Image (cartoon, rainbow, N blue to C red; front, side, top):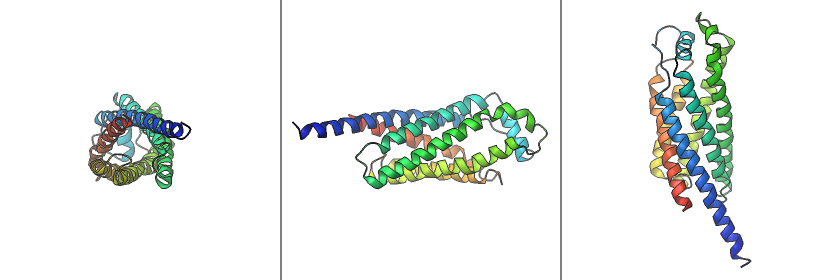
Length: 218
């Protein structure tokens, strides 16, 4: 009894964390796909500030970015739960914690991105402002790091079969690289903007890995 009880408790804790991470990743993935699908676009005309203003004033800005904010918050909770599982090994657990921290920072960045629409009028002239500068660097740096952290978790988790498998690895890798490349270059060129829709594969990766984790919980 004294030997089996800790084993049972550990197994129960891992199952509970798998359930939490599974639900959060699956719901986060769905929210990410929906947020990306409803994201406002621009006409492609004018400079970057004018294009940003065009998106900020569209009614779909708030619903879309609320979904994206929700998805990143769910990713953060889900990945933190993964890092606490106790069956990952030291290196993988540490890596998952780092990825969770990056996701937490990206969640804060997305909150700022969401409410930037409140200052849309200041961009109407098409001239750079503190708001447009913050938006640019928020997307260029924070979103790129976030996408690369997803790539890392998808690859490491898929290879070790601790987060998804080799199939989900391909989804997370493709979606993360596409999103990272589009985000990293958004301040300089429109050339890679068409890669953003491919970034929705991050949501497919999360949903698939989440369902797998939930089923693993038993």
